[in-house]
Image (tube, rainbow, N blue to C red; front, top):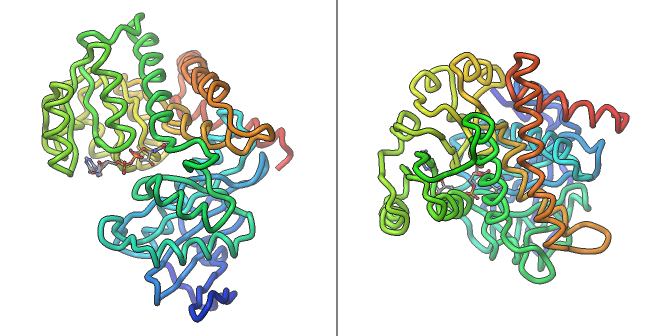
Length: 373
Ligand code: NAI
């Protein structure tokens, strides 16, 4: 149980209001997900409704960069665990992808539909500002392009924005997932042809929807699920998709399962129900635990490690921070390298009889170690 007993609080004045910025690194150590984080911050502004975690995992390769998620976790501990797992994933993603950034992530504990007020975003901008450039951020689940634009108007270290930025990273993430999914097909079936291939897509948000569009255009047969019924209705009309209940998508008859919603969908309990022979989707932290990849391997499922296949968004926002400014052509060229990276991981995993995420993690660690930390 997370206990914040002696917070070291830094008061950040903002007009008549007060934000508390609390270094909770020592408390976070107690959690299993901690994994050597460099720094963990809790931002609290009761008046403006903000409870946010900023987790900075590892900055060996560069400053921490990662999106801000807004999600109504049931407790502060769950919010912190989510932030820690996501932030660690960003370290690995940047290292495997070869972008000069470290891993960080923020999670704001509220329901984006009801709790995302201008006052809350204002308080979060103060938190980012108080972190004095320790953390670069952008969109994730619950934080829109308009929100990123608002934050950018208040603080410089916000990416994925409209003015002078690279825009919403989701379409670029979807492009990387699309190419990665085809690489997995090619590896498994000897052809990346999508016509007649059945793909079960979980989550029809920014990435899932764009991915469906690309898959449908090349003749894939879609089965979809979302907790938002309106999106499902739209997908049936737009892509001729079949729909199943949210809790039935993993067991849908399919060649590929594309998780594009939240994390921890592949667990010891759910993996036996999986019908698809390939898992290739955008969601971060698809596996409940690292060991679940071995279960997938034992069942003959080819798993495209999440932080490798979904790196398109990171590549795009990182390109904004490049010395020469954002170059979309160069960013897309780097996204086009995702299939090659994945294929190398698939081959090495097979040759060494290891789960694909072990190989991906080893690759990331090699690069971080070379950087000397
Ligand atoms: P989003 O918020 O636009 O979409 C998420 C969708 O999943 C929503 O439509 C939501 O209703 C649905 N959903 C939530 N729980 C569900 C459940 N149990 N079953 C079915 N559907 C459910 O988010 P976005 O941006 O599309 O991201 C999706 C995933 O991809 C997230 O895990 C995110 O962290 C990851 N990701 C996103 C990137 C981006 O560029 N947006 C970059 C890399 C990873």
